Length: 368
Image 1 (cartoon, rainbow, N blue to C red):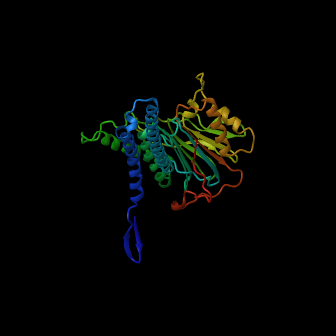
Image 2 (cartoon, rainbow, N blue to C red):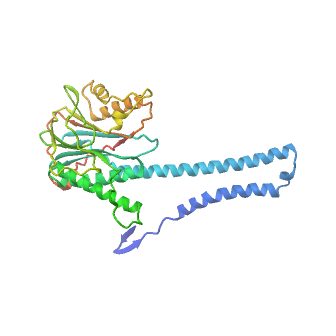
């Protein structure tokens, strides 16, 4: 880091003293304990005796040394685990950055449930932004788990955050995401097989992303483009129903998009209506007897007592999911809830530099 003072650049000295002391402590304590054990064994006359008392003392010394080594190793592993969780949390805040609680008159809440204990990020992706074209939302699920799925999700989200503001049509947003995914998979294939020196013939043959794009205009009209993703649920006075029954397109990756890509009209989000977007892990969750989780029933219970909020819907659904799976879901689950306030909706922000609303008290993305 460069610090400017009195017009003269000054390079701050790296803080290596604390790091050096930690390394010295990590290496020094086992060495000291080993030296104590060896010195006692070969330098102490008591260790050469064969009496019961001498044996007890010798055993106590080596037990103390062994216990010290175990505790030291355990402490080092715990420190590494804490550091890894900090890194994972920082990565999650960049990949799935916290959503504002309000977007152009819509109340917003999102949460994620990981199938792996201690995991902070995975292949599920979501984002919601206010643009001059309306509130645009993406919900998707990259194939697989681990670093490969995280990289795929990051490529798609990065493209969406730009295209959502730039493209007037939702189909063109999807085209940008499709090209970004293909480019990411080609670059990954080249990195995995650098000896070939050429682009692989079919880098997307086994990789795909299910994706749902939504656009909610100022008058509440909902338009969508669906690529192999579950349709969201619409909650209104009539109950809980699927937003649309249209056949989705294939997932992004294996097949090219059709040349004329038009968004599907899905009705209107009336005042006090809610939309619930989710990844397939929610409806694929099973209990000990192999029965699937009923998301519509959980949503119906969540809105039984009105008024409801997106946060209360998430809490009720995730509690039901954990009860259904006995706390051990087999797949990552992400949910995003949009609620249209009964009051007059705020005007959409037109300037691109301020299109994403910044709340006074931002609510971090919930990770369960």
